[in-house]
Length: 190
Image 1 (tube, one colour):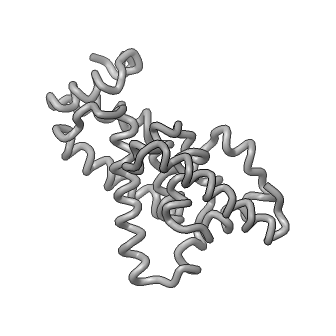
Image 2: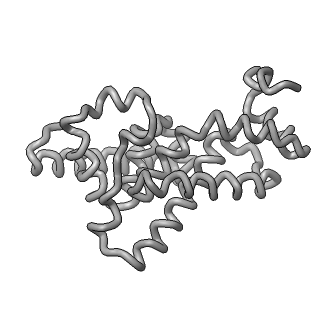
């Protein structure tokens, strides 16, 4: 089937084709979800510079684990969960080597592509928001990154992070409060 016809297939159909050895089917899944994966990786690990490598590693792991997808959630959630796990593992390894302040110096949401969040995070406030996000803990960054940077629903975020939806709701509320407090301390109002 020509690549131009891929858009008519849903992710589950493409995944089944990928399991049967169709490389173009998996490539289409990657194309569909790469931008969200980059955003999740960047926010979880705190660096857009490292996000590309993390996403690539996550996609390779997903390809090797095609048989592991059980259909419990969407293909998108399954794929993004793998990427988020790779980002957390990367962060753990890096944390052993670097001080916390150095870990987030390269965070820039602008490098993650265009989207609705780009209209909200304006240039003047961008650096303050990035710094405030970097100040937050890993769980807070992960939930806010999934919900607001990658634009995932609460259910998708729960699937990606491997937690109940109620936990996503409570973590989001607490993380937003901490983010708002941090921004207000820096003179930026949320």
